[in-house]
Length: 254
Ligand code: BG6
Image (cartoon, rainbow, N blue to C red; front, side, top):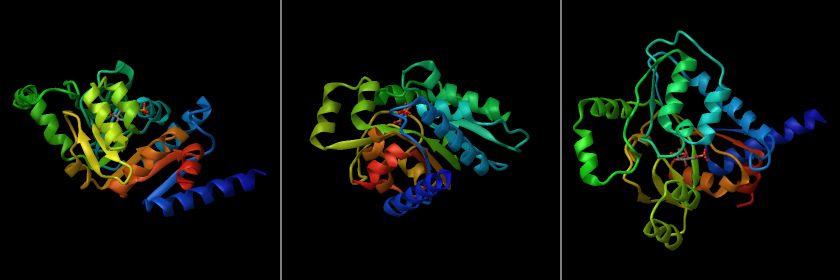
């Protein structure tokens, strides 16, 4: 029985990898929308994938969210990696402290016994505020390092859910409806065919940066994130996806 189960999972991984044309796909059993156990398994698996990619001179960027918090929680410790720097890939989302990119980056650095830098700015500012902050030496320094990220670990979500969490105003929701935006990742909103249609005034990694990063790991699961995962993979398929059966089966049926 176990054998067939594992066989089915690896078949799902293969089918999904082909459908999304991704570098690698890892699928854990279950659906995080239905049980907590699957969420922890997802975090554990993602943790292993990430640890394998960490080498000397890695500049690791990580985003916020409950998935990233779980990944770091479940990750095993690893020490003595030369010249490892951990950074938040973006500014704060003004959510709970525990799921802000800063907190997650600091916790990850503790697990890896590495250096880290934090980005002490809110994730949505107006253009003038942003300009002023970018002139600050400490902030400029972190933003420069963010451009050098060579291993990015990120979470993604439904456009509507994330707009709600970001306390977006009605014009944003209107655009999401009108343009049929389905996905959000690091402050950018995408249509189902992977075109970036809207961006928040958020600080941190840019899409130009993102397109040049060598190793990228996306961790997103649950049938509710199927469309979002699909859209993000249409934008750029140069990443390793760690997901669950709930999302995988739904994506395969799209
Ligand atoms: C946020 C990221 O912190 O987490 C978003 O900035 C992402 O880009 C979101 O969509 C995902 O959150 P969660 O809680 O579903 O893992």
